[in-house]
Amino acid sequence: MLLAVDVGNTSSVIGLFDGERLAAEWRIATRFRTSDELDVTLRGLLASRGIATDAITAGILSTTVPPVQQPWEDVLERVAGFAPVTIEPGTRTGVAVRVQNPREVGPDRIANAAAAAATVGAPSIVVDFGTATNFDVIAADGAFIGGSIAPGLEVSMEALFARAARLGKVELIAPPTAIGTATIDSLQSGAVYGFAGLVDGIVGRLRAELGAPDCPVVATGGLSVLIAEHCATVTSIDPYLTLTGLRLIWERAIAAA
Image (cartoon, rainbow, N blue to C red; front, side, top):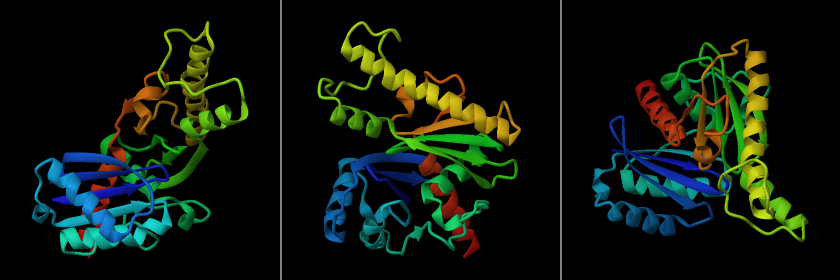
């Protein structure tokens, strides 16, 4: 079984693949942990689902947080018995990266491109709702050609609460109407419907520049289910798209070895 780990700035998502099937998935907070701490955490997660560590035969890692890369590589090698595939410059991902500086592109965006091309086709666009809201554009030949990066919903709301003394934190849910009649539902309206409008506006521009006005748009990431259903341009939601991309890249890297 393949253990795929996507480490983001806020959360780390761990997926266990049995062939092409995602058999289990976990989400933990991203913070620096030693290899020993990660070992205990990972084995505990596996045990909670009744999965023996000797069932793990391979690993793949994507991280946008450099300080945690080595501990994760160490623990994946301990558990799987082999060094993991780490997505970094030089890794054979099967995704051409046609931007000014390919080394700047986050590995999660490359994984998204690989998964989108394989699942919904190309050209296509991925909207990844995380600490930042990433818009990943995939050309007709499956290449990653850039996109857009906006602040994430939670980051934006935290900034608002920190700067506005009379506004308190609210639960991030969609209110029944866009016209809020109280501060709470007004904040929720601005957050949910405001970000839905941001998504539709940027996607419209990206589609126009791509010359593909009806291309598929896949939403992924932790807040994808909350926001995407209110977006007119999103055609599908796949919370585990990045994990699927990691599996595909692992398969390609192994085949090319």
